[in-house]
Each structure stands twice: as structure tokens, then as C-alpha cells.
Length: 88
Image (cartoon, rainbow, N blue to C red; front, side):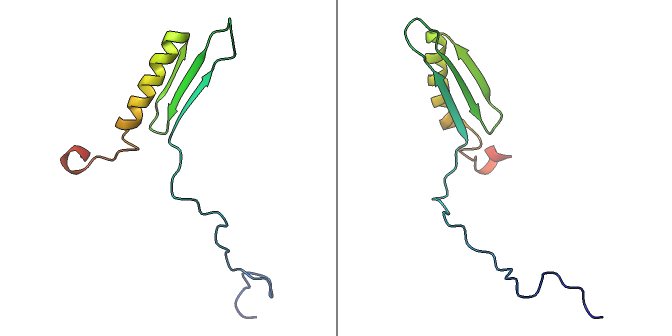
């Protein structure tokens, strides 16, 4: 009887390379702002793969969240890995 067949005969099993390998970058943080127009209240959410999930409602709160999101991008542990003793 022999060994069991893994694939049908004549069917190629080679894996093709990814047609668009990209440049190695991938998103880790998102800032979503909704400002629909005059007379409406703007809203915003800030999310990150590190677990951060914040939201704001109103012009001043949204502006503060935008600034906080920008600061978080520079301090996020997923974006800026720590080295040496600080990593432990």
C-alpha cells in the first residue's frame, strides 16, 4: 500500500511570495476625529495596540486628546522598545 498521499498528484504545493510585501511598517495607533460641521459637537478616539483606548467629546477635549495622542506616539512601549535595565 505504501505511504499515504499528502497532496493530489500533479498539484503544485509551492508557496508563492507575497505580491506586495510592503515596506515593513504597520499601524499601531489610530486617531479618529469626527467634526461634521457647524453647530455640531466634534468627537475623537485614540486607540493603540498597547491597550490605550481614550475618547473625547467637545472642541477643547478633542484638542487635548489630539495633543495627548501625539505625546503617546513618542512614549508608547510598543513603538519605542526600552533597552537595558529599563526593559526589565
